Length: 129
Length: 372
Image (cartoon, rainbow over all chains, first blue to last red; front, side, top):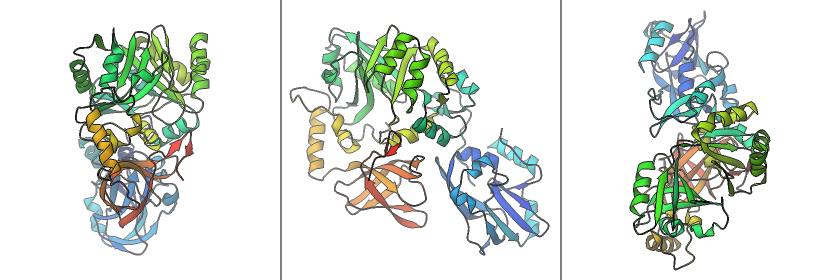
């Protein structure tokens, strides 16, 4: 059974989001997603400073098995990317919810958060797949 | 993320080691109707285990077929593209294709010379058609073709595999394992032990009664041999440049365009084998540059080559038949069928056309990179 963190928000496309008090959202992929992908061998990250739209493909995660797009769950400007993943992409497998984060964005529309799932809804979503 | 690759719950045939796989934390997937372990956590960790120490694979899903009777040699010299007459000693092994009359590859297999005749190990996904073909071609030969579903196969591979396996067996079996040369085997009552495999490392395969499989498995694990899933089996064989049936060749491809020419015994010239005329023509056509060849590809940059991708060479288009990430080389490698004589090759990756290097289809042997 994959791990789902209580305080995070989740997108249907299996990204998680954590928003801090300054409106900075950290985005990664869920434990369920990394498990489905298997061993991750490459990660491509968005460029710093670009504005991304909610549900836009902004990063790529490539495993031994398959390549998958990572979508931004929210609209905003990319303020930071996790460059350690370029050298150690397996961190996404081992720590999907902390050291395995992908990028941070300064969000421009907090209302978009309401469209994301909470942990319970996401657990149901995973079960249905 | 779009994980459209979640397998449905598997319900299929199970090997005698199914419970052992669950005990070891296997992720079970459907493989040609069998519930098989794809990995026990990380396929890269398992891959490296085989390159650096030793791992055990349960390959009991593969089909064992025994051929006995008064003329099994005559039958197999007709049935197979390689020549079993090369097998001078009991237990000796030979890799061969089994061809259609038109040269298409029905399957690839290993054949061992045995006291009762020959033992053949074919792929699991091709079991039904292989058995049907083998029976249909047996007319006119005094042979008996018998499937052996009562046997299990454990493959132990890696630099320390021989030492570790020989130490945990009884003295007779242990000495046999330690003393066998590559591609040689030995029958020890109802066990057959052979130095064959699919990883590019040294190793030994145990073909044993199903009832003996669990105990051998547990002994190996107790000796720190780690269980290895089908995921790592695929990256290990790809690094070793070994074909996977159904992916790198099948009925629609000649062995000549599948890097299998060396496995066809054209000599002696008077041996009639199924597909001989077709592959003889194919070889001539390839030498004229009219047929493609199966080569190795190496991607120097980031990204992973995938089966089915189209490639462009200076001689035309080709296709990747197997592609993955090489855990040993830490870059992507592939097998691809491309026009003969190609000297440059590009593949469409994210970010556009990307150069890939054409190399001999053999990437890693005994833990080391083998192409320049």
